[in-house]
Image 1 (cartoon, rainbow, N blue to C red):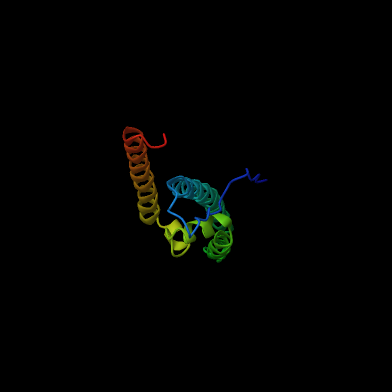
Image 2 (cartoon, rainbow, N blue to C red):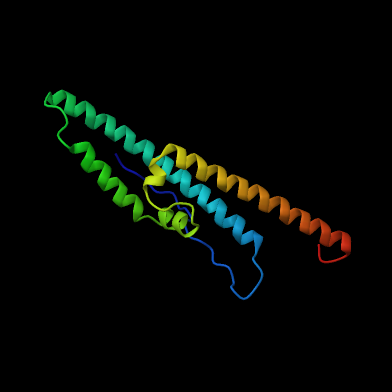
Amino acid sequence: MKIYKIAQQFEMIQQNPGSQNDPDVQIQNLQNSQQALQYFKDVINQADVVMADMRSLEDSLGIGDIGLRSQFTEVIKSAMQQTPAFNLLAQMNLISSVDNLLNQSDLSNIENLIITNISSMSNQYSSSQQNMTQIGGPA
C-alpha cells in the first residue's frame, strides 16, 4: 500500500508580540488545527485497518496474541508524535500527549473546542468590523 501525502499546512502562524492579536491569524491557526485533527483521524482509521489485518493473521496462526499489535501501536504512537500536525496541536495547547488523539472522547472534545473558538472569534471579528464601519473607521 502506498500513501501519498497531500500538501498540508501544519505550522502555527506566529503573532507579532509587539502588536495587538490578529484574529485572522488566530482563526487560521484554529483551521490548521482542524486539518491536523482530520489528518490524525485518517491515520487512526488506516491503523485500525492494519490492526484488524494483524488480528486476522494472528488468528490464522492459531497461537493467539504474538505481540505484533502492541508493537505496531507503539510504533504508530511514536510516529504520530514526530509529525508537524502533532507539533501544531501541542503548540496550540490542544493536546498534551498522543493519547489525547487516540481517545475518542478527547478527540471529540478537542474538535468541539476548535469549532467553538472559530465561531466565537468569527462573530467577534465581524461585530468589530461592523462597529468600525458604523463609527466611520476603516471598512
